[in-house]
Length: 371
Picture 1 (cartoon, rainbow, N blue to C red):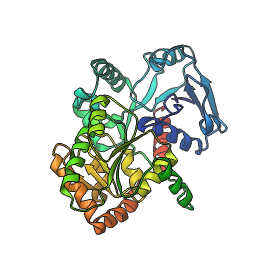
Picture 2: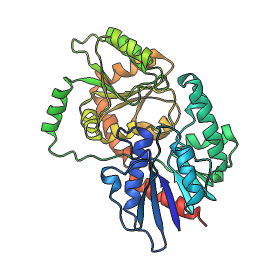
Picture 3: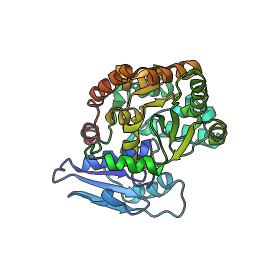
Picture 4: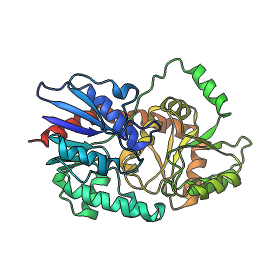
């Protein structure tokens, strides 16, 4: 039995949600021994980098070179499926190639393009709809990270619930011992002083960054304390970034750091006054787990899957109401006991999630789909 996995996203240098999901899932799958008749092939347009390229027994790397940036999955991987197809292909993102083996499994993380079309270009909306429509209907099984996304797919595409398997994502636990020097180095590198609010994620319209900055402006006007926390934004630019950039430049106290490594992220979470995540829509929300694992209290919107993931370990706000976001920031700034309570609940809640559990459940779906 041969299973092929699209490792192109996992192999990218700078990773965000889907890329980290692909990477950590593959790394945990490697730890599960294969039977003698089982084999896994990792497909990528480039040679696998770092730990990803260290393969255990029964695993194989196959580089499928492609001269351009786009359409590797839909064309180059499709060509491989035509001539040298595995028994099953697993794509950890929502786009299947146009030529496929009889068995195929995908992960659909969310349907944000349908609910917030204004956050995407016209081409992106067309492309995402086409790819999702094709992939969701043709897939043998569909993996989703939350019950929210499962119900969303059932509603929008009329897919039977039996075809969809909910497998929550995990988080990467960093070594938290002897980090004082690393913390000081990080704060000096980015010229950060405590306290500060933190946002982590792509800087795009769907994430409500402009609303966050406006709510932060109101927060600055509302507090009477002399030491006002800064708002630190971590992440790569996305659609609508030009408007976000204007808000950043016009608002005192907002600082943009760009993309950080996973180790730097862990350190900056641990030093933040609170993590603020007023997104309009999320299929899961890995940053919530990262914040919980690093002892950072959370203010999150109640949109999408976020209440399902955070439960009572999070302070919630209405992403459409700036006063609601502002009041949440004031609460976490002024009430130390509230922050401590959320940190304690966060540590408890995050224990329900792990990449190990995610990998074990995913392997079960993949191999059961071959029967």
